[in-house]
Length: 90
Image (tube, rainbow, N blue to C red; front, side, top):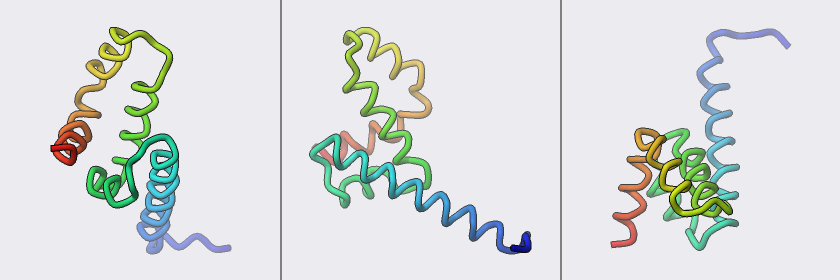
């Protein structure tokens, strides 16, 4: 197979889409969120990975203070996801 640099964007977009679908499936299995809600909360590429990481923190066996500290230390990463998620709950 010959590498075509003009096709690189398509390859990267396909890989990002596949990754988002993989994380959306994991999120749906871990939560009561539907694919429609996940798509609404995670509109940009990579958002599902962030939501999945946030869910893992919340569902971890850590105590509440450690969970809060972990979320707070990653607040820039999780901020938009948290706002989107809470807005869907309102």
